[in-house]
Amino acid sequence: MTTPSRFIALALRTTRFAINSATDAELGRPRMIQAIAWISDQMAALKRFVGADARLVVVPEYFLTGFPMGEVVLRYRRRMSPFAPSQNDVWDRYISHYG
Image 1 (cartoon, rainbow, N blue to C red):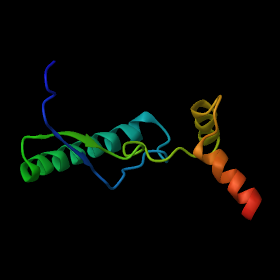
Image 2 (cartoon, rainbow, N blue to C red):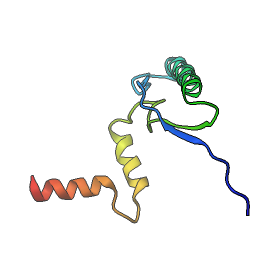
Image 3 (cartoon, one colour):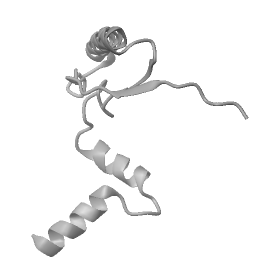
Image 4 (cartoon, one colour):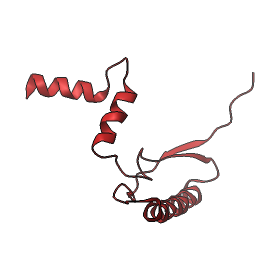
């Protein structure tokens, strides 16, 4: 059995360049490209600071698009928990119990 190679994983908290207010792809695409370029620069800086072992960078879930709004959130929630409670179900129960 071989020993897995060692590496460093980093969680990167970032400013999000939300595109959820863009009305079409022409408005959203440049914002996404700007966000990707920014993240690329941040990852390069992290690698220079931490070293070559930095091979996994985790970014926030909606760093590229912004948080979905309205009806999209409800559809997302239903897809995430078709057979099991989600964190939102726990929160709803907590609110109903404790107010």
